[in-house]
Amino acid sequence: MTNPAEILGLPKPAWAADEVGMLYDMAHRFMSEEIAPRYDEFEKNEMVDRECWLKAGAAGLLCASMPEEYGGSGGTFAHESAIIEAIGHVGVDGFGIGLHNSIVAPYILHYGSEEQKKKWLPKLATGELIGAIAMTEPGAGSDLQGVKTRAEKDGNQYKVNGSKTFITNGQLANFIIIVTKTDPEKGAKGTSLIVVETDEVEGFERGRNLDKIGLKANDTSELFFNDMRVPTSNLLGHEEGQGFVQLMQQLPQERLQIGTGAIAMVERALALTIDYVKERKAFGKAIIDFQNTQFKMAELKTEATIGRVFYNDCVARHIDGGLDPVTASMAKYWLSDLQGKVVDECLQLHGGYGYMNEYPIARMFRDARVQRIYGGTNEIMKLLIGRSL
Ligand SMILES: Cc1cc2nc3c(=O)[nH]c(=O)nc-3n(C[C@H](O)[C@H](O)[C@H](O)COP(=O)(O)OP(=O)(O)OC[C@H]3O[C@@H](n4cnc5c(N)ncnc54)[C@H](O)[C@@H]3O)c2cc1C
Image 1 (tube, rainbow, N blue to C red):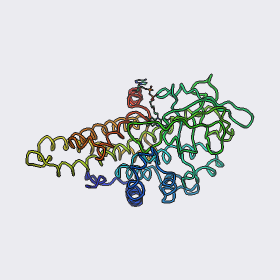
Image 2: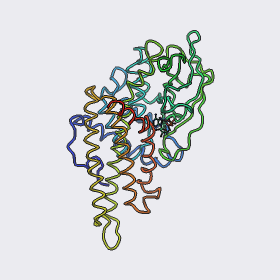
Image 3: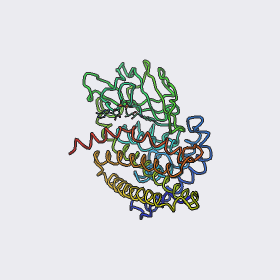
Image 4: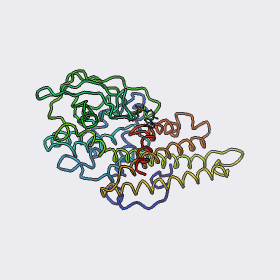
């Protein structure tokens, strides 16, 4: 296949030089050798084996941006980007290590006490702990202030009651950050993040592994808390009520990493489709010889180039600490919309074969759709951008 990493022919950004490039190559090799050959089995089982998480940890692909003193590799978001891009370029998008690495672990690094960091980050880096973040509830998705899960202090424990849904890594995760209300009267100011180590807790129950239209290799689940007892020392932050601020501070990176997956899939879709339209013939010539195909591919390549340049700039700004939440929302919404458009147009150029599951573009079509929904829907992104005008 044409190389998706080089399909746009752009120079590498400064942040992707040297060891970031080496990490990309290593992650690409790992995904091609360890995950891709078994991916059909993982889709059928609706989750990736725990053993693969441990292997990813041993290969240095977990917690790449966490400091070395806590078991990480001491990198930046550029390193996380390299890993997520490799996942997208190989086409194993259901392997949920992006969320573990660049969403769950950073909450511990930024808001955890020294003791919490020493206790949890090294195990997240080996894959002994698999991370998830549980915000969404059956009655509260876009409107997170409506979260009802209640954590009541009882001595040196919290008694947690409530339920969550659509939680990525929900079957495998044994380390879950839960968005709770510690003081429901105070609304957003009564929201707190509490960590649950599910191997050690009573009153925790996993619901169904939800039947999705795409990202089949990822386990996405309901979670239930029935008088679940969690030590008060598992609160993130020095005091209760910090949860909403913590979420708002971390959402830009979550949104940017959705953009990472989007641009990587766009590049893979283009690479696959260029190969396909050169091979496939109709009316005595290759599909690429029709002017419609050339115009379509020219449009898609142009938009992908614009998307990649924008993405690279967002990463550069994020590494310097200057990526504002509004621009991160733009990246999430625009790149995931672009992903949906490119994958749809590329499927069309595959004709009937594009609709067959054995062709990778079919899986990409199913996997791409959710990118416009999770991490805050694209409508919510526009709301946030609109408010800044
Ligand atoms: C595969 C998958 C994985 C997920 N992983 C996680 C996870 O790991 N952790 C987690 O906490 N959550 C996760 N989610 C949940 C996801 O973040 C929510 O589904 C999403 O935020 C939308 O919430 P909702 O489903 O309740 O939709 P709703 O909030 O009910 O929205 C329904 C529709 O109304 C629109 N809408 C809502 N409010 C407004 C408004 N003010 N203005 C305009 N339009 C509006 C929305 O854009 C949407 O189109 C996941 C979801 C999926 C499908």
